[in-house]
Amino acid sequence: MSTQEPLQYTSNGLPILIPNMKPLPQDVWKPTKHLTKPEPPPPPPDLAPAAEAAALLAGVDGKALLKKTKPRRTVDYFGPMGRWYALKKTAPSPGYIPHLHPAAPYIIDLLPPIAYPNNPSTSLCTKFVHTSTNKVRGPVNCVTWTPTGRRVLTGSTSGEFTLWNGLTFNFETILQAHDNAIRAFEFNHSGAFLASADQGGVVKYFQENMNCVFSYPAHPSAIRGLSFSPNDSRFVTGSDDATLKIWAFEESREERTLTGHGWDVRCVQWHPSKGLLVSGSKDNLIKFWDPRTGTCLSTLHQHKNTIQALAFSPHLDGNYLAAGSRDQSVSVFDIRAMKEFRMYKGHKREVCSLAWHPIHPILVSGGSEGDLLYWDLFSPTNTASAALPSTLPFSSVVTPSEPRATLSQAHDSNIWSLAFHPLGHLLASASNDHTTRFWSRERPGDSSSVFSGGGEKPPEAAEGDGDDDGDDAWGQDEGENALPGLGGMPGLYDQNVGPNGGWEDQKLGGMSRDTTMYDDSDALPGFGPSDMVVDSSGGGQGRGRGYGIQPSYGPPGGGGGGRAPLPQASSMLPRQADGFNDGAKKSRWGP
Image 1 (cartoon, rainbow, N blue to C red):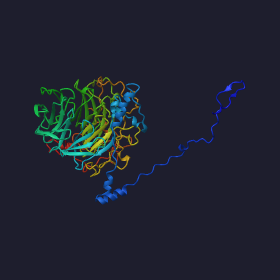
Image 2: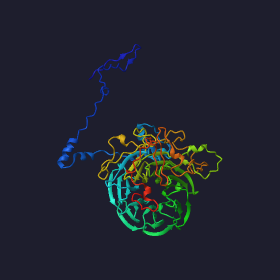
Image 3: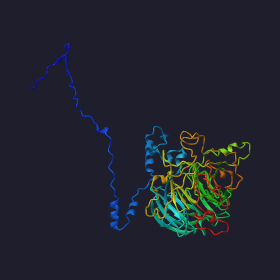
Image 4: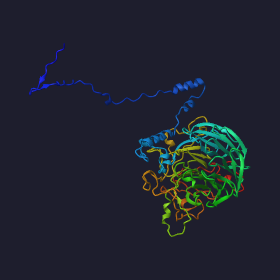
């Protein structure tokens, strides 16, 4: 039986039920390891000697074996898409988007372009990513992304299909698809089949696994354009025989032949949602066709030289048509009124290719001088024309707009084809310089960006360093790949942008035509006052080429207006004009 301690009482005679707590001892353990400086991690083991020794035993070159292990850079869209879907569930309001700051920690907050419907500046693919080159070098005439966006398909003058990985941009496979140069191909809207056409006028059908299922001659001359109808039941081809043909896809049967052009048909497009065809020709005309009756609905005469490229806008219900010409200009037409909506002049030589961004009203054009220019459809027009008297009756003249971003010498020669990733965060460009290059969006606080006028030239792909065997075409360090800069790009914090980055007071369907005219409207292309701008460093900008006149690129010893010096004529590839001179034999370099 245990004995209880006697109760203690206060001075008032009340018992103390809770005894006094004993003080804790002074030698209590306290953590101190967090106060010491952490030790650096152990260095990784040097595997080079072991790898070289194993390679020597196997009878291969050890240095070549080590080159294969160099990691590739990846532009991955899974992270931003996952964060965007998670944000839609956790956002405090339906339209909430985290505010981006120009700092590296905010890179993880960069969402896909579809998350910024009112901010087209997030879709300017101006950062050089990668150069892909086949071992057997040759001009690349066309490029497209697979419908899933996981791979890039290119077609070359050797008749080969080359498949590149869409994340790491390395070589995957190559296929001898045609006997002649591939001039056009396109996936149908369902993504189940690919139709391609070549220099000999042959059309072939391919499945998703690149298995050729059918082939037949469609034209006696080269086919320059191919486009599917909205329901994939038909497609149209345009050829050098100055005709367009509408084909039933499943039956491979010709339904109708459209005649009306006076020269070679260079491009053709089927409206993405309507029964409407548009074609551009060497006769400088843009014609609209009714595919049901085969009649010409309208003809546009705005351009003064060959129409090289046409593209319907994938957004805005396809109401805008972009046209690129050899007169060094790009025009955007409103097909509802059949009038010119915008004129873009910035290329120094002819425009070869066009591509619309899949999300935003941004148009990118590629020229034969190797430049890539980005145009915002609803950006403010050129402010230099504001000084003109407002009383002049020039309501039918459209003021040229300034490019939103410029990539000078993105390629060394003609840019034949452009294609945006279905998500809009990557751009692939195919060129006459035998390379396919990839461009991505700038990242917040990206220190490798070069924000100088005209940018700088991408690193050269060394001979034999193609991607057929998995070699990487990147340079030795990050600085070599930091390109291209862009001058005067309106960013996220400009004074004339809205709270979300979009242009204020811009309605997508209600833009009115300008009542001013540009200064050099009566000048020959390439010889207007805007082509003789001299920068502050004293270098001459140089004239563009106009109608076969040989250009001059600034005074001797001049800076060249921020551009790298052009190569000598002996080292340049044949010009596009060499393949299309009147009465001359067509060169194999032109598409």
